[in-house]
Amino acid sequence: MPSQRFAVEFDRRTVGIAVRVPGGFMFFSSSDRFRALDGRTFPRARALERELKRTARPKRRPRTAASRRLSTA
Image (cartoon, rainbow, N blue to C red; front, side, top):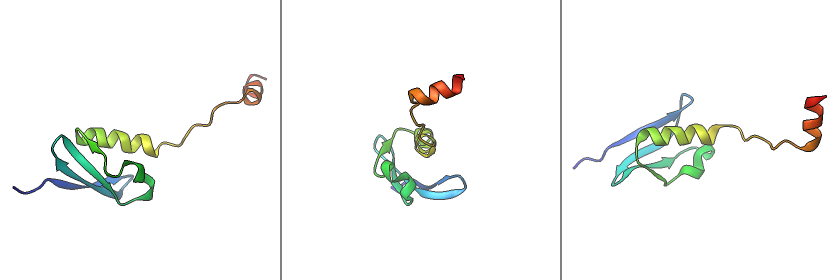
């Protein structure tokens, strides 16, 4: 039986491959940006896509009391 696999692209760049395994698709990262997802299994390709977007999103810094005072002034 041939395996199902496909290149995974994000922001017009190849960032890894996804291979069909029992239970979904296993992601193999070729990009340091998505290394945290390497080896994870996703139930559907759409779930992998959502996680790529979430991982790529810039981290929000928590607001401090000083920044809250400045924004209300």
